[in-house]
Length: 639
Image (cartoon, rainbow, N blue to C red; front, side, top):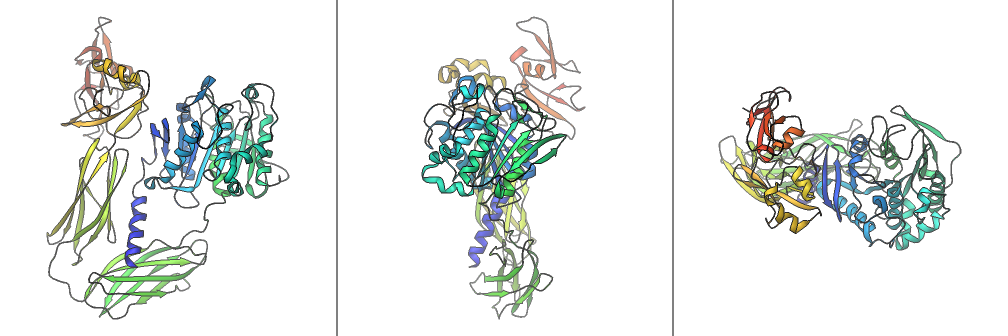
């Protein structure tokens, strides 16, 4: 039983300790059948359920997914613990629309299949910590209609849908920019659900439209809302509420049990409503932040999550009293009462005990084991509440009897979780003498002192090189005795882009252009960064398309494929306050770090501010550094 508790704790800590690029965007990822997905992972968890929510947002016609990087999606993601995925449609119709009006509408067809795969791939990856009961889809215009259709096809996958300025399910392309088409949304959606219709019983929908939209007929707002309400079997509540947020307003109409909402986004044209400060192609700032609204609406009305908050155990104390162990601590439950405390004791030699007790009026508990043989014991304490919720176990060790002769700590159960160019190594460490001094994990990027929680350790490192990596672990006690362990893992430092975008980002140059073009043409393809001595080189899967050997780019996952300044390599800050960038001279110039003079075809390049010459003309690769915030740049690395 103690082993089950230890395994449960290790698994829980393993997931919590491995956020995937938390608090940042990852761009142009290949996920779920899509070549390009922008992904934002927040530091926070959803206020309900277990873990994070997932919101997939679909772009509109002629709209780049890059536009959603300025739509304040990060604000909603952090506030409501939502991972946000913005995929670029693979099977586009005219004007780069999601092709909601043509093709087969089934779970296995085209981008419908891709979206279901994207949702399942992200929610099924334990390292991302996404609750599969909190997966949502939303979109603008053609993306809104496609999102609604997808939610009808897969109500078991999508607990909620957001439809912003979208034509109704099953309408034609003419209905998007012409006269409103009448549609029986309820019937069409139910038929699409097929064998999964029972999942409509717990799905929710938000329908929204800018009241100043002159592109897509506003008739679809109420038609879609009433259609989804009919599908769910709920009636509209009387009246409406004005929502004020960040200087904008919207009028909200609700149906029973929060199953359907309809918004009029005041002052908004045909755009995704990003709230104050939002900008970009078909991104509007006149009304509220619709993603924030969805975060609140979904979290408040999701009928699939377990809303019982699990109890917690804190302040665990263990003390040997003769041949027994005294256990004490505090257990609390925010939304109920703690009904039972279970204590599992297990010795290294196999003996132990199992106890149950209760808490007093203040939440404190105490218990004493039976007679135990001399040994080191692991004690796991869990609390159960009145709704059946169970806490994570609190685990620690205590010795009964005299300490044994000095012996080294023992490492076990080593594991690794990889996300991007980051890795978290974790495992168990037990020291019979209870004089453990430290656990250190050494990655390719250096040594990291592990965090300790009872018998569990974990350490995390980022900016790891692509390819095979090794991490070594050393547990050291106060007498200098040590145990060692190691693990091997793979880092995929890849970036997906077209050939021109790879060149613009500085991963490739023109010296190998012919080979790359013959293999890929104008299609997107993936390059991974491989270590080459103390530098790196970008290459494809068979090394037939390779870039120059240059400073390593690191792995923050924020490269957008094309790059704004030619793929700054981010050499790091060896000296506090020093900024270091490596790129081709041309891209130093476009980023304002350099200037050029002389012959148009073979100009001379100079560092901005210092006027130091840079070798190699346009495609010379140079490292520059600045110690004054980017005003003056000098050739070379940071001191």
